Amino acid sequence: MRYKIVAGNWKMNLNQQQAIQLTNDINEYLSNHDLARQVKVVIHPPLPYLANCVNYISEKNSTTFGVGGQNCYTQASGAYTGETAPEMLKDIGCQYVLIGHSERRKYFNENHSLLAEKVDKALEAGLTPIFCCGELLDIREAGTHEAHVEAQLSESLFHLSKADFSKIIIAYEPVWAIGTGVTASPEQAQDMHAALRQVIAKKYDKDTAENTTILYGGSCKPANAEALFSQPDVDGGLIGGASLKADSFTKIIEIMTKCVKTM
Ligand code: PEP
Image (cartoon, rainbow, N blue to C red; front, side, top):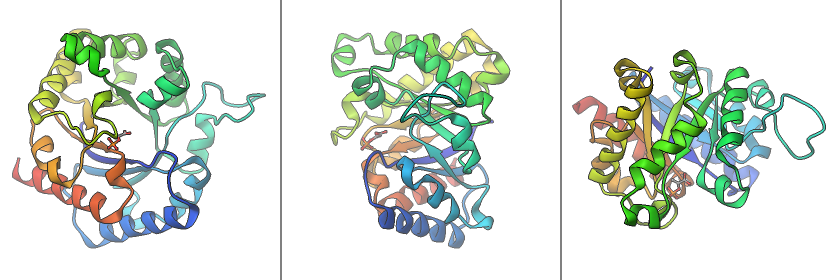
């Protein structure tokens, strides 16, 4: 099912009190505003605060407002010191998990096959994977960015059955735009999202491609969200820096809602 999603990746930021306050502020915003039916909001707090944040989402907002992990492991339990099972995320009330964020690929050497396994295990645990993909600047400059991102999907997702692939959310995040203040132009985002739909259609079918939620991530903020979200193949954003403050994040939610209503 294709949704419009505004997801916040808090990375390794905020303390407990700030995390609860931010969750509370978003919850309050959602309690006081009507979102379009297909708009969903997700936050990805740091692991130690996840369970607490889940508890600050009111019953009324629970179908619109979800919480996700920033990572998970490939095993349900066992002697894996420091790791988190997808089942544990599910157990504390998470619905989503980020898989393959460029920072995990870069700093923790996560490769295609590990990511494929994480996707499988997250699905088995009943979580919705938000699969991140995107190219480095040199790849963009060489003009091979579409082939690169298509390969990321093909290596880590295309082993899935059509039914399982339909549960995946994709976040296209050009690495050169993450945390840099440089954003992809709306046209660059649209071109990549359209290209991804084409490869999905080729692998599965047109319906599957049309029903896949594809988010854009990389320096998305209130000032550029409308131009990005108005693109026909951009279904919302995975937001880093601008998700750490309630006013900028809720502004982006407001922009998403407005874009849906005018589509
Ligand atoms: C991210 O890390 O997923 C991200 C998009 O970060 P930022 O919005 O800060 O570029």
